[in-house]
Image (cartoon, rainbow over all chains, first blue to last red):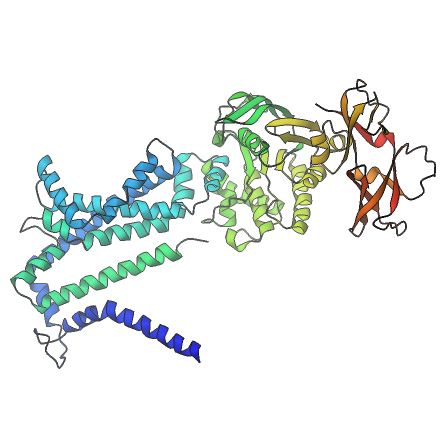
Length: 261
Length: 355
């Protein structure tokens, strides 16, 4: 009897938690399909807002900027981050622990501060605001995530596998490409998805580093809301949420279930 | 195939001397066991021969060629690791093919060589499986097939049977020995299991604290240990300590123990005698004469452990507990607390110089 009540309470708690997390998002998604631009009920189905979104050139240009920057950030960060993780795994050098410890704070430092610092720094070294500055900023933000995720995967790697490959006559490149990389691949992919998400969802740093005409989607949305709210924003937000969630689910899948036991 | 010579090899890690002036000649085609407790340097020595690590000083040659500075991937050795180290992302066949594939062999050659190697270890039909779908014994065989398919000059085994259960281990010992004979490869085998070393190898080297304590055929080391450590580490032995009488010792209480005819040590020096538990006869008739078993001690049975085919008696004598192993012949079962006489032949007594 008591167990049943406890079980029921447990289930209720989980549902409340999920409602807290997802209810605002679900309502927003529903409203992006509602005829009324002022959240008025009864609900009437329409795809009008998605259609008008398609006409909004500025929003579409910003979307492409975001995708481009996120893809390039992902590529750069996966390659550099994986290489850095391998180096940290294989070699012992002076100050290695210090270097590894320094990788974590950037994740914890508020983006507002990082963004300000980058703005000042880029101005100082003569890199003007714009898409290139945003890309550099995103790479710097996302790199620690890739290193942390790939390094975590490397912790599960059995070093005898590299020794076995060497004993069979494999050179360093063959050992890495045929034994080590296949093992850490789930971590590399998960790290890459993290990097994509960090870049694609980034607002603060992008806002600081962008120029009015040339910006990313989150910044453009913010600018649009300030001018006046339209359900188009609901529509574009819904699209972003779907894409982001799909990416996060993929990440979870690769990170948790990837590779052999 | 080739013999391996290790000459005066030393290797330190910081202040710890892992290998201290070790020299061993591994004969071409022989099966050599390196035996020792953990930390004795046996695995370090194997890694020097493999080329994972280089000696601080000394020479290592394979087939007459100096290799002490040649990295592992260029030494043409085959190695089986303690936990097999099979590549989890590859099938069994791809695991075995790895060594040939990195050498750039033709696909057709690889396929036929892999099949031959898998047949040799009796896994001919399992090439398509993944390592995690195999049992421990099967993984062991795959690791072996992978190590020998490249026709290495030496086969190195690092406690390869340690992870298997007892029954499977005995099967694999026989199997490993069969394969080794069939391809005639020089094999160096690291183990801490003395029984494994005795049953499998042509020669055994016993290591302790980075030094080679004794080296030779299993029978020689078992029957003629040169130190108390060798006597007690390989098999069990009763050790008596006393003063040398030339060809035997005198215990502190004056009892004399005679060693075999060949034994000679300067009289008066500190010395020990080692006697294997199975060489001692145990009886209750104190007065009986037994000319062949001239050594005699009186004692009292403190404990008996029955193991089916034999029994081990623990006999208290002058503050020392002696072990006696008696075959189960169905008679002469002695009770705990019984007074007994122990007799054994001088030929069964090994005289060891101490200090």
